[in-house]
Image (tube, rainbow, N blue to C red; front, side, top):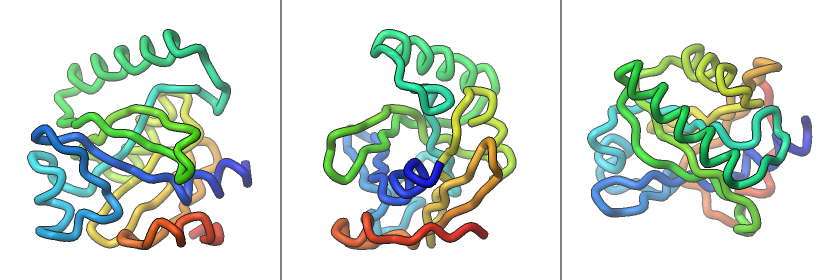
Length: 156
């Protein structure tokens, strides 16, 4: 799990809204609320890709995300397309930025889709919330990309 936690802490998160891709670390002008409109932060970033951290074929992952999308819609949750990507761009998982969830609700959503962790983004920080182990690692928003891979895990 330590390798995953380190990778998650350096993941670049983006949201697509109004025809633009917004980097959640660097959307400082107008704050997070303006950047992810119409969503109201905090937001959870979640995917249905690669349940339990086990790689799946593309068609399986895409079908899982479509089922997740239907689930989000059936619950009346507001969402935008999102992407989590490694800083070296060798790995990426599309998913959803979901508004209206507490940290506990974000973890529950991740558990329903067999995810090991989800991201929880506020104006001040990005948290990685464990769905199986209930850890909570955080980093401030706005770090230069070169610093993202150097953060220590800090469970809180």
